[in-house]
Amino acid sequence: MKVVHVVEALEGGVYTYFKDLSWFFGSEEIRKTVDTTILYSGHRNGVNPAKVQAEFSPNVKLIHIEMVREIAPFQDLKSLYKLRKQLQEIDPDIVHLHSSKAGVLGRIAVFALFKKRKVFYTPHGYSFLRTDISKATQNLYFTIEKSFQQVFGGTTIACGDTEFEIAKTIGPSKLNRNGVDIVAIRLYFQPHQNEKLTIGILGRITAARNPELFNEIAFRFPNFNFIWIGDGELGHLITAPNIQITGWILDQKTVLTTLNTIDIYLQTSIWEGLPIAVLEAMVLEKPVVATNIVGNKDVVLPNKTGFLFDDINELDAYFETLKNPENRMIFGEKAFKRCQELFDKNLNFKQLLTLYQE
Image (tube, rainbow, N blue to C red):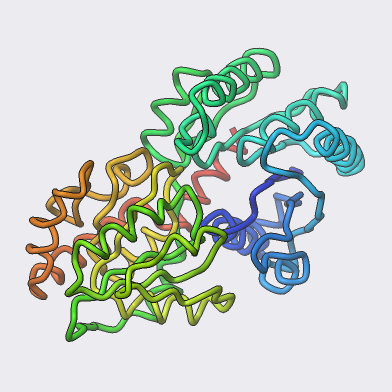
């Protein structure tokens, strides 16, 4: 069975997801029956073809195709031509599209082959849920998602429970949750308490992570330390004196070692699919305080593994609870257990393989 994955936004959590996917489907056992190719677009924040080749399984074929996130007719036509050409050469049995742009271009490319293929699509966070765009653009993106499903068909594989509920209103859907490499991440777990409470986030400083809110929270709690593990184009919005920005850390070992040093993980995002960074923090037994949005609320169990908030004023009570080291330990242990039960990448990739074989 030949499976081709097409992904436009190979960075952040999606990068981690695909790196793990490459090693699972590139394993000796799986590759006996499944031949895997990943068509991807890179050149983002240190994510380039050389890095991908170095970190992904050598048993998975990697092909770089330029794609852009926003609607860009000339570039999109070029990407579509190259994508169709690659699919024609590979002649896959299954095409699995990831992210909205790949979902659009990939469906057209498959249709242009004039030969039926089984098509799956994972949004990793529907584009029409973005809040950094106008209502008109949101409606446009929803119309595109709905119409492409109706015209070209295929099955949506949602990466989280709420995304699954939304997907079912659009067309045929399955649930396959994101997962992380629990065994590998646990190598970096060490019980850790800071003298001054340290609250952190991991990821690119971009609109989706809402750095303005993170900055506002840091100003509200001047007696706590805050750390942003990463960097990004909106770094200038981070102005609170008690926030440290690490800059880009391309070495995953250093990322996880740094993540282990925080006391509380704070996810301020305004839209998500199902956040990999939150799962990584939970495996390291960090209680999570997160915005009450799609994705975050599929991971965090309020009053058990952390807290969800709609308003910054709620954080006074939540941080007061989590100032207690014993409470953080109890929340963290429950967070780790929840990852073991629902977000183990090996279990979830096995489920994905079963969906391919149906």
